[in-house]
Image (tube, rainbow, N blue to C red; front, side, top):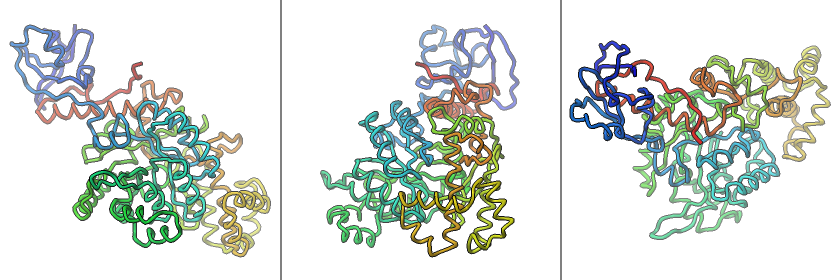
Length: 541
């Protein structure tokens, strides 16, 4: 039996030698597999001048253990121990990990149910969907996961307040107990209503929080709003409207708006492109200051999302103090996601540099951008062209005839009059107030026509609209490229093998493996290069 040998110093050289004992590495095994016995102590031992690893079970079976010199060891470490145990107990999950919402139902029922059945938290991508469609999803997910875990996305919609309100009220009515609040610039009556409506007095003066909020933020000023109790003015208004009672208003003044804060770094979709290594510590420090100020019985948990796509990035987040990690872009390429096969193939081929920023449909007039894939699609360039026209002209009629013709032929592929008819029909069902505002406001009308393209482009990507491949809007961050590099040569390289639970378990298992590796390194014990990465492996049945 041969095995890689190593010495506990930086200057050591590695060579393949005959192992003198199964104590160094058990027969048929290797160093990575020994380290991967995560629930066992792993020892670094010297025997007859040679150094190797063995697990506690191997050591117990060998009678020659007394002749071994102990150089170092690492204790058992399982993936569930990486984060905050309160995240596990509160949400009823087995790992400090969740899959984030992807709008327009990309994070669909199938994805959320697959996560939930495996004891993991997944968030349904309710943003951009009408209440009837959201209600359908609630019914299907609650039937499959009557005890959870699952969450639904509540996105801030400044241009469509009625949609945000309808979603929040639906979540209250249908007893959706966890929402992932995203894209909020400030607290709105609707997220406050959801939070307050789930508050009850508990025993021993402890407030029962039935409606949990996971707030996804990228700015300290927004994080602070979710870390503090709901503003008195919003509670007073809700009370006057009869949407909450006096008891709920009083309880809401004593609990934070969010149970969990997801620090969103450089992510796909809505993002400020902030680096996690700078953003996460600052939000953790803010949490600690507010905790000292408010004295909450249960401190707010702070997790990390954006850029989490490899064991190394997950471990880095945990080592900086993240209570949990959240993945996004990588899940869009999974079998369960509501994305077309063409889109999944493009995602599987993406590199870290294959992303760019483009105007967002939901906040188009504000100039807000989101991160999308640029490889294999012309959407970013075309969307930016529409925003430039919106900035430069006050109405459709002001756009030069030649430019308008190019828009209709190359981008829209139909007349603007036809698009306006479709837009009117769409918003009469969704939010009639939008049409009323636009009829007497030419620039607003132009914005809605341009948003027709921005909104449909993501749906074309999801549904695989034939002939529109160059217009697909695919939300994606650089984490996708990092993931593809990590899984190259493994079974996860093929898109058809990518399942959300496989990704979750391999990421977390890999992070734990690297943690143990680093523990040996801090003891002056260096393992050979072949051990310094984790290769994804299929889940055991």
